[in-house]
Length: 232
Image (cartoon, rainbow, N blue to C red; front, side):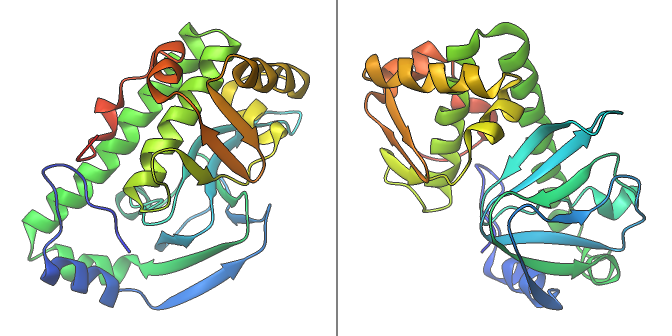
């Protein structure tokens, strides 16, 4: 269930401890809030199936996605020390989510500093992805933003065993891509057409097909090193 990253592979015992800390699995429908911003929380979640997001609403109620999560990721482990989140957590698709109470985390982490370090590392990867998202929105043009995001999701889906490196299931709408990339829905529609016509990728919800991975990475100025995954 839990993804391994370069240099922080979980042992069989550690994986068993974390999975044993799960008290229940909850099923959520698409477009449902799991945690409200500012809400006091006593659990963290591991995504089993589906796609989750973290988001911030502005004063007008318009949403900006600040991260997207794929199966196998510990979505909000940072809620364990923080107790409150400054953002909301919600589903983009139907999702299965494993619930891990913070008290259970405390019992298994306090006597095991190495396991605590590995989970801390996972939060630092989340921070690295946030920096990449800032770079994407701040420095790339519209086509580059979408290309970068598709490349990132391709690597993460492959790491979760959900992609062969060329095609993967990504049931996001053009509105979702707009919120992720800081664009309008109309602009995203044009970008998707440009990427297809350039022979880089085809976005046909709920699937993405990467036609030329190297060229797509160049167009999105994408370097996967911040994801700390093993293999190509």
